[in-house]
Length: 81
Image: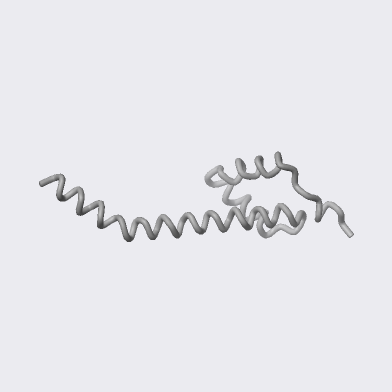
């Protein structure tokens, strides 16, 4: 059995991965790579949870733009009159 596969991540590792995943293009690529990687289960699960946060944020932004975009446009029309 490979002990490195189940080795827990330190708090500094979680902090470093959060900074790494926040980098716009490289972070997204590494996020996808680590979420599919099988070398460390804890890192893979953390990357998958971070990916879920990205997806949830995108869905919330899309819903906000759809529902509140027209609302702000109406307010701007009122103020411009």
